[in-house]
Image (cartoon, rainbow, N blue to C red; front, side):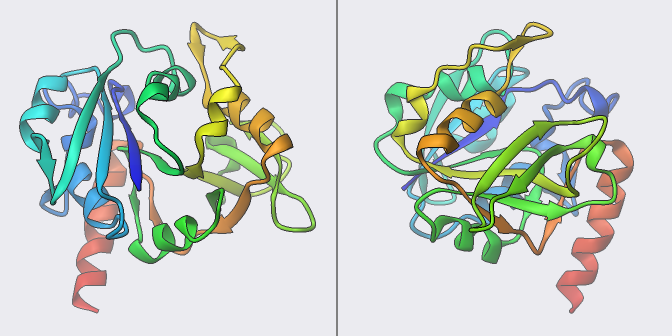
Length: 228
């Protein structure tokens, strides 16, 4: 099974830490974010497709072409045109079902395994700050009903944690809605879910890394978890 990892962003909210280091290589608990992410992937993930852009040579040097025993293919995103654009760049490389996530946050291995047990799925987490995230609403059967990016009036407190399981049918829905010069995957996913139901799976362990203070919190949490 393949895994697409978006790692092209500039990490502007983490400045000045990202002035000379791409966000996926920022150290959390003594290890790069990418290390935490790939270590937690299910064992049957045998190929990584990493979308790079900002300071990409550092990421390529760090990962090489075999990273944690997995083949690596790189996709270059020349312009920061959003998540929908980054995903679309991978269209011709996708073989079947695939895991799709950001090189931003730390997830639990158990949660990623649960996500991949569904034909199509997304992970979501109850948050106290829903206005900061993409918010999801579920149908009675637990599938995705609504997906809104950083709403001013959140319809729920369930935040998408940026982990999805899709199949090739996602590419039937080209990103068309341009916002601030970017194409977001939210629009693709909303259309995709109408024809191909997506199970919304509640995540148990999620460490979002968006701001400098998040790194210290995450490092402390990981240290505590390791001791336990």
